[in-house]
Amino acid sequence: GQQLNQSPQSMFIQEGEDVSMNCTSSSIFNTWLWYKQEPGEGPVLLIALYKAGELTSNGRLTAQFGITRKDSFLNISASIPSDVGIYFCAGQYSGAGSYQLTFGKGTKLSVIP
Amino acid sequence: NAGVTQTPKFQVLKTGQSMTLQCAQDMNHNSMYWYRQDPGMGLRLIYYSASEGTTDKGEVPNGYNVSRLNKREFSLRLESAAPSQTSVYFCASSGTLTQETQYFGPGTRLLVL
Image (cartoon, rainbow over all chains, first blue to last red; front, side, top):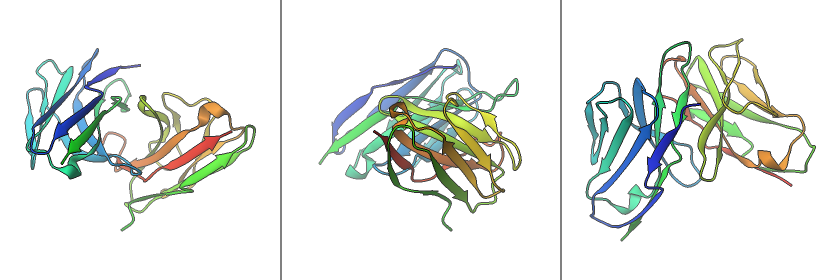
């Protein structure tokens, strides 16, 4: 199956710092999604990207759909303690009857007050 | 509006025992999914149901069966539990199969001894 490489695996940052994480794939996707999972909860969708080169913001979060359609980036500006959690990227290729989401392994974010 | 609900929240089984994980959604969604989440592995799709009356295998279906009982409910059954099935199980739903926005339940934590 398709593989997503998400990095970094974990991050420890000071409150107020900016955060960057990314996902790369061996194959192209039509859609890139970014989810956040807090302890004991299911993933919640943060941002959805539909077109190569697209840059989308949701508050302090900004995500980009890579030009090659094989990568995506998520930035968080001015981090706060409630940003703590695991961030997952997911890609979807809607073709040849396949609609499944492929998830990255997650980036665990810890924010030091 | 509860969204996606799952029962039970926690379960301990002995090897060889059987159990059914329940999932229900109240968003009138057509498509439903079962994922498992293991440390460092991200989310992997077990089975999905595009619409009432249909089910299909995902990435890791072995050892599981599913039933789409009606539009609201999608259950996952372990006929003979194995320690390798120790995991956190998430149910999700979306409006349609091609609609990438999947809403997740809070998860069921399963330990097989």
